[in-house]
Length: 389
Image (tube, rainbow, N blue to C red; front, side, top):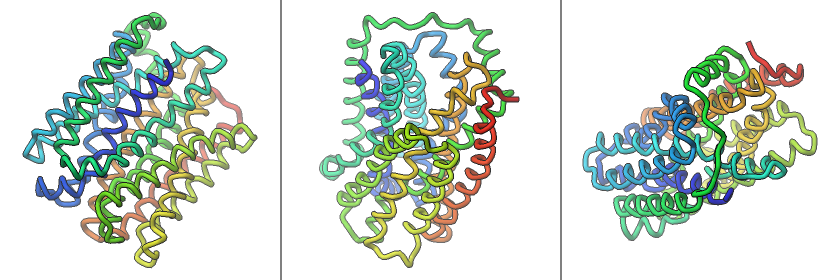
């Protein structure tokens, strides 16, 4: 059952990873510049940044299972309609629709996992859930040869069919699951207001935003950059990018092990963000040898993969109250969406204006912001505070 829900997240993450792989072809087909193309990634996260909390409220009111199933169908519809869109604005609009489905899945699936997993394995189940994004992005990038055969429009249709099929599997597999009774709307609104008034959720949300912005600034254009820098075929560029993204899942597991072995969370965050900054500069610096770009990307992905694990592991300590853990997770995930908007959009604008080397300083700027938040994080964590104000 847990694997079924993680699989839903993986298939949803295909819709994030398919754009970097297909971006060069979409630019040619739609006549998009680099700056406009960056919004194919960023538009996906608009809904999550603006409507993450309302979608969470909807899941509480209607039930996580219904929201998860509806969200898979919305994702399928967005992909299917996008395959037939001919104007850039229409494609961007369908990406927003896909983003609505994506945030629904990422809000509902953890609730379903919590309901399905026995208490003795719940933490490991949540750790497994944390790998859905790198696993999904890696798998879809490995499908680059299929993209070369059927084009980006055909690939969108394949994803639409896959999403609809998985929605049917999810509906069949969750027929007997029982979830806790939904809260009343006033109680939910009071809880969200209480979380918004505390410092802890904002610190975690800010850290997730800085991480996501730095990561996707570096990786949204990686296949395009590799094809131009290394002069390799688009399929090979996607395969190399998939290898780098896959390292993030290993970073998730590494982060969990380091925390279990007693490494302080703030120290792990400082180290991870530091490596992210160094590798972000190395990836796009003209002085870096062509053969060093992919290794730098792999190390960046591995190091940054520890960051979400630290954030999610800290939720219970940073929640204003023990009954506001869910609302605190919601803040963190909205931060993730904000970063997914800001990172690719800023990277595309800077690269179009100043060249690829401008992405390195952008990653540093996000990391500096993150380190300021890590200082606040460390103080609260050391003091053992569980409430905010």
